[in-house]
Length: 224
Image (cartoon, rainbow, N blue to C red; front, top):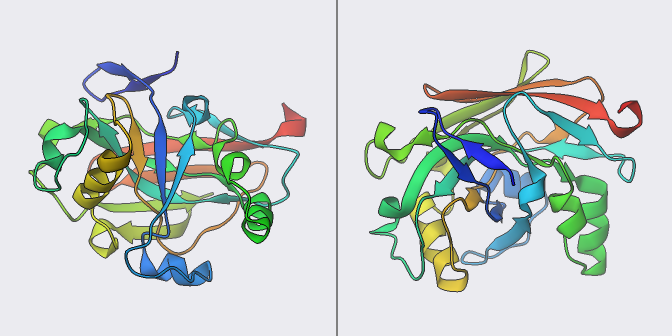
């Protein structure tokens, strides 16, 4: 079983990962979104997708276009069902920065055919996550998380959660009306604009500004 690692040395088994699609207007536009307000894209990654700080994204041979998407990550700390957004903060164990690696060519094909995204989003090594900052390190209901992604030292994405369409609390409220969220479950809250292709040999550094960094190497499957 894989464990999430907290900065205070505690651990928690990795649970189900819930991804939020197109939660930033500019990213939705760059993806050619036709979503209406109130509509949400939810997808799931298995726990086997998890990669800790210092690990690797292995580019699978089934895809020619693996994209990076940097995101604020929320870790659930206790059983969570039908929780209101006003109380959502009390169910959070901590925050991190993560990368939602996506097989964009396979995702595009799935969209065109009306098929699920399971392969495009849930392949192994598709969810690098930094160490988790315990919730006690944040002011309650913090809204302005800043984060960025550098590839080979060059800034590729910069985001602030003030620009999210749906806040962390709103996402917890919505997900907990449908799923039973459990300790160790993870929410990838969406990515800002600037997504692009990963290449063999890339070195990624994501940062949740003022809190934690995530370092990941990219390796082609054929080189493993």
